[in-house]
Length: 230
Image (cartoon, rainbow, N blue to C red; front, side, top):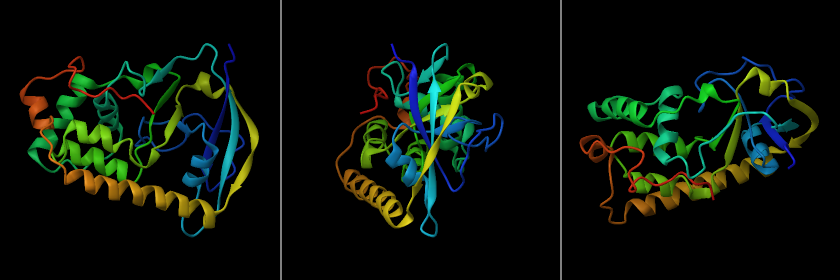
């Protein structure tokens, strides 16, 4: 079985040697080097409306690495939310949001630091807003799971451990042109937002975070959508 995978990291910089311990600790899965297996997505993530960027290319030997795949059927959408709550900065301004944060971390949390690499959704732009809406009791868990599949949301791979960093090999870069890839990025986000607003107009009698807390619902409950990437 081939254990070598190709990865891309979108950035405004060329990064020949990713540095263990560098970066922002408040990213989705904590301090890590965030990549994707999609060259197009890396190019979208690399650009802004004002500048071109770079899709840095790497190979990673995954043999002997301990991998956490949050998008496998072993995990639910709430495992992903709990991991975000431990690392990202959310608007926790209401009593229900404060209770939601504690309940989700206590009952759905995953120790990502026990793994070498993490695979899961990337919570950028609108998708972070959907997660925030859920913990503030604005949308149900079913709506959240559906929202995370809007706009063909990308899957990211976060390289966490020093051992995993030692297995990265730089393979060059592609230029990401803002005139092409910022338009694609904005179109993806706009499409997702438009579909999300349409979805909110539909009748929904699903589980909200208040229901989950009051019912003492855990990860084994069949009503919690599994976080399977499509």
